[in-house]
Image: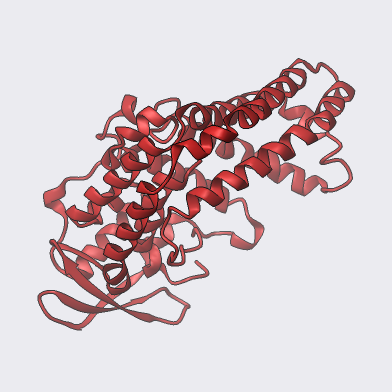
Length: 332
């Protein structure tokens, strides 16, 4: 793990932010909260034991442990922000984004053999890199499928967002698939989520509500982190200090969104999706490498338009998201 493992808890903020900045075959709703859930009353009270508990859950790719590690008010904030975002976005555009992503994944998965030999790959990657691409493909498809079937995948689902279910199912799937991808990296050989179990946690000093923990990984320099107890959960001091202000800022910006502004751009945005859909039909129908390459070349213009539109939409949404985000740990 290139960065200290104790930064893992800050995944909570990023995962929460994902709920409103995001623009297996089972969805969150279908699978239910039991898939990766953990008992709330099993959460340790001692700070060092609590952190070891969360690290152990992450080592098993159990996203539910991140939700369980949040104070109750933080969970309510994440749900409320996601649901508010769902009420502010244009449902036709938002739903079309996820439907298009799903369609792209389906078409490309069907034509993946053409992709491995396409003009975008041929001559630019050696055989080892293409082999790595092949090995990574299933995990990438699983991540896309998890997102496009999750409670983030439509405006209606977002308005009914339940963090407990999302973290137990979608987050668990993504952790497992990202872990699989990390193992394919030559410079990351031997490192995985399982390495979280190697982290040694030592309680240095503190009170009933504050604690200083020393966290170390064999072969790396140990670091200390200040934690504070919030509603029975131990969270990094930095997180506790900034959480409330970030939530207030995010809520204020979301509430200030004017739906009429997006309405003016809606016809142009939807027309890009029509173009992309037409190109995907050509790509899907390709029966030879030449047909595939020609269809792929013709896709460049609408894809660039879609990317530019996505950047524009992301810019607007990012203005509604917390401006200061802690560093996410590099996936072990």
